[in-house]
Image (cartoon, rainbow, N blue to C red; front, side, top):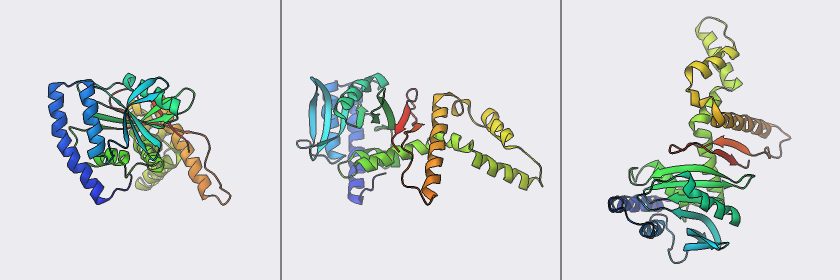
Length: 279
């Protein structure tokens, strides 16, 4: 997570707690998208520390179309925000328009929110353009003091946002999600450690690595963690990270693998997109 001062962390916690009651009230009243945009503008100012008159642009024009909000600091757009009315459930289709806007402008970060739910996406400029769900936050139900709340709003904040911090944010989410952990458990190194430990505990009983791999896949791990595109992408990601780590230890290493690192990022609300981040 971006390094935040105690003052900034306290501001996020205090202001989010205030807005939780405001958002809950708006949710009961089922207010319009326009009213939701107004509240999001205020949250960006009071929670994230942006000057609403200097840093936040409403109806930001991109090639004849408009995105609800754009956050811009020092003449550089940090992220775009697509806003839906607080009573509307967020769906992947809602962010497509903002992703298209971002792709046209070369903007890497997009937020989709209805005030209550916040999703932060990374845009990957490949063929085709892909969106990567980096984090999702229930702004009403999550404790204002929780690490998740500080992580989400801290990384988006005026003080905490940077390309480097957001890249680290993405990588941290990629390497700690359930698919990646399952993939790590299936690597030869971990399986060999497991084989040796079983042999040590059982006075030399022999067990093969292939047997342990099969046991993990068929009897220990949940099916969705070993099959499907998400699991395959995580395994590919782990292999590339291992190669990169090995080269870093070598005396002649100069660069890390130039190929993209592919891994899933969990999205509890929909099917998982493949996550891609340049190494």
